[in-house]
Amino acid sequence: MDVFVTRKIPDIGIKKLKERYDVEVSSKPRNLTKEELIESVKGKDALLCLLTDTIDEEIVNAGKDLKVISNYAVGYDNIDVEAATERVIAVTNTPGVLTEATAEIAWALMMAVARNVIKGDKFVRDDRFEGWDPTLMIGHELHGKTLGIVGMGNIGSKVAEISQSFEMDVIYYNRSRNHEVEDKIGAEFVELDELLSRSDFVSLHVPLTEKTEGMIGSEELDKMSEDSYLINTARGEVVDEEALVETLKKGGIAGAGIDVYADEPHGANPEYYDLENVVLTPHLGSASYRAREGMSIMAAENIIAMLEGEKPENIVNPVVLKQEQ
Image 1 (cartoon, rainbow, N blue to C red):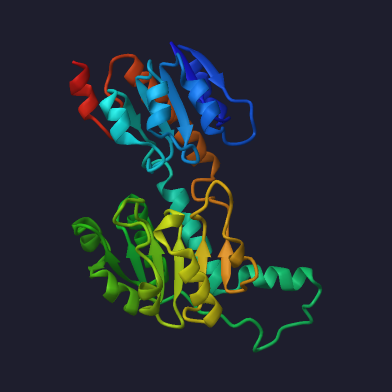
Image 2 (cartoon, helix red, strand yellow; image 1 turned 60 degrees about the horizontal axis):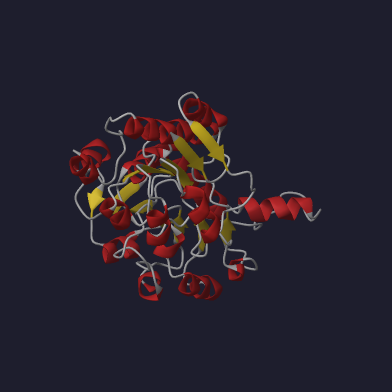
């Protein structure tokens, strides 16, 4: 069988696939165009793609022999799952393995923006540091503050767990109650408006759906206090970036830490660049050796399971398994 991989990923997963199948990995150091993807999936039994690859209905239909689309990511909003299901193509993802890595990035952004880490680094490198100053770059502590988590899934729960080291109060908003995290750390379930108004730090961990797209806009940002921070390691489209830029410019909130952007894979909103109260990272949520290699293995194993007639562990449209029978 033939497998196509849209971009080089850690070799450990590719080697597992090559032990069984003919594997073609794109040699291009960029995302493939739609036309390139259409040509590449023709005659292939499996596609391993990235979250930056838009796999729409036209591409799905071009892959007439496809049995599985394995997404190298937790989210799968880049794939037309409905179109894949109609063609009895399994869609899989890589949850769990990147939970800790993404939670750590959320915390790194919180600490960096609240304690002026990036601003301080530049200040020293510019040779402006002339000794300790009692009024220099005073920031906000995290200890004892209120952390609001929007989306209490695996990653949100890990962020909440880490917060206990800072003795923070945790409130959260989710589509359903997470009794486990409530029992474990005493997290309090609240509605979104209350979370925004009470939180010193708001950390976003929701998937991108029709309901979550643009869920944090000017109206929501206005509910946050001037001393609060917004952290986004979910998806860029969850936040109205123009509204956030305006809020940051006028000091409506103290700052933001952002790892994801609405215009990916084309980059970040350039309006952020001149703002000193925002810390930007290039979608590093899963960028640890353990997480990225684990994702590679999981993406490969999802393909192997489907091609060998077994149920992939992480299938997002299991109805296709019944359709195959």
